[in-house]
Image (cartoon, rainbow, N blue to C red; front, side, top):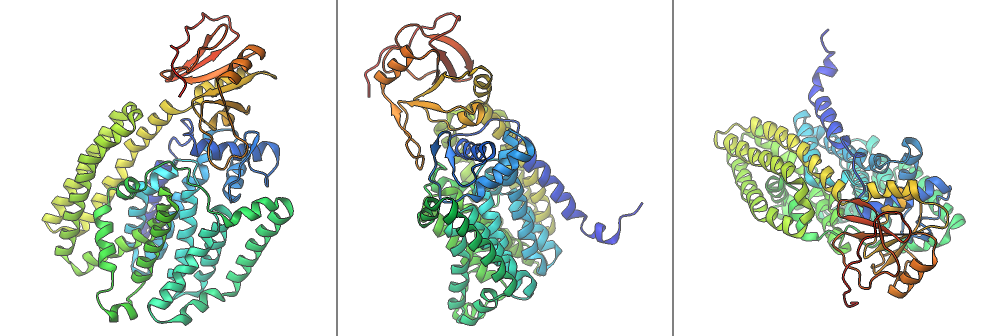
Length: 541
């Protein structure tokens, strides 16, 4: 039976969307949580789902002074729907990554179906979209809502029906991410109106009646609930949330846009106005997209939150898609070859210099060496194909085939992500403790702070010789004398320690090996197992 014309016309989009769904949802619940970012978010959401306290975020038994609640509400809703699992904590971030691709395609649609397809392909295959979507992280949701607001601004210039999207994306970002998510879109629109010397261009968006109802309803309702239920959370809205990504900004900025970094940079530079006339009379949405990218990149730099760069992805993907489509339409071979040469240079440098540095900084990546090797093969194939098609002046194949190779490269990368997470997570030891813990027994983390332990055990732990995480109120770390007293006076104590981590002082009485999982060792003061010799005594730091 032949496909209907509308289905046949959009079959490329349907196939791309199905492929992205498979890649983004494949394995998101098969491995353990990363700490501290994922463990913290998962623990807060689990508390909300199990205790029914949506306005009092708690990390274990301690209050968490984060500035927003919407992200944890979504995770708690997902936990209630899908049950206790890692999949539930990563469900909405994976959905948000797909929404980024859809938003990019909708923004580029007025330039043609080909431009929309390119926009979805670029945004869906960029590392900065894929990797955060595999984490229980607010950043992908933030980027998706910013993509929604950007769609409202870009499409709303010619179609008033899209203008409420700008209000919806901005006000929902206030609930999910914080005040920056609400203020930055409107600030960008205001700066754009000043740049093009058209102050009145803000008013059609600002005074859109359905949009005002959305902003007032969601915004005032959220603030009123905070005022009534937990005024402390309302006061925290004035503070920027601390960065818990623990990722250096510059490496993320350099590698996050792989494998399209050269094309993205070329599209960004090409969109810059060449004269005052270009500035005052911009053609299409390029200048607004350029300004949007600049504002959000600068905001991420100021907040020192590397993953916040994800909010730049929708605008950059559309700029790149417009550049690709224009090169095919006008047959600008030299421009495409120049962009390909720049991309070859940047990606080769990142592969040759970045991978050895990455393995030296993060030795745990060694467990995923085989998967990363396959990913490197696809990356080299991407570079070779782009060079060949640019050299032979086959521009349509250049953008289409390299995009498909980039799509395939996500498959081994997802496998590498799974292997690293399994090797570094507390999943197995957490599940063991979940079945063994009884009332009155104590779990101690030695020289580590893994919030995901609460997610797996639903039991709070005591820290020893560990640095407290930011924004968790009342978290303290015990010293050796307190640990020894706990070890002698408590009926049963479980001590979780890294296999290669020496004790600064030997434990009193017997020490028994209860459970081993990778690099993690679980010791106890009460067990019928063969006693384990305590680590050598080292001076207390």
